[in-house]
Length: 223
Image (tube, rainbow, N blue to C red; front, side, top):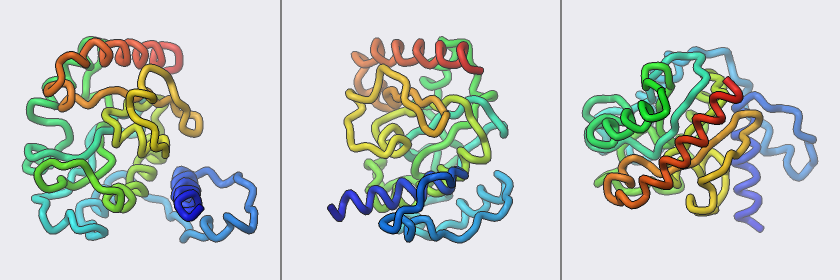
């Protein structure tokens, strides 16, 4: 029950940051909605806040935070897991081998990264490129929600289990989530494999290609 209440509270906070405030205020959940009012902000202001963040221990080991990059507003958004070594050094998401593969994946469905806003769930590199821990994701989740609110995407490609599960607030494995379209308050979300995973597991590229074609259909239908 405690885990359920904790998850519910995180979900309600997430929705409010996105600007959704029409949920019924039952006494049991009202306290979760008592957040400070959000003041108007720009993406640049949010990025400065992310770069100065000290909300979890990752700030002690990072070279720099990696907020994300791309135009805003933007109809297409890509969300990954966390910065790797190259991203930590350059301050940009998806560079190095994973970034090159991502660009090839996008080119295969006639997209260029310059017309996409790209970010990660966690904004600082976990030591050794390990999977982000729950507390690290929790610290960064409001940043991601605020980015979505500012960027106003119509579709999101969620790369990897961390991105898919964080966006959809589920514990289901990626294998169960991929291959179909999910909805996040009117935004279409298509989960797929992370490029870094595909580099380690080339046999998954066929399934990833099916996900990309699904994402392409979503874009053609709704953007």
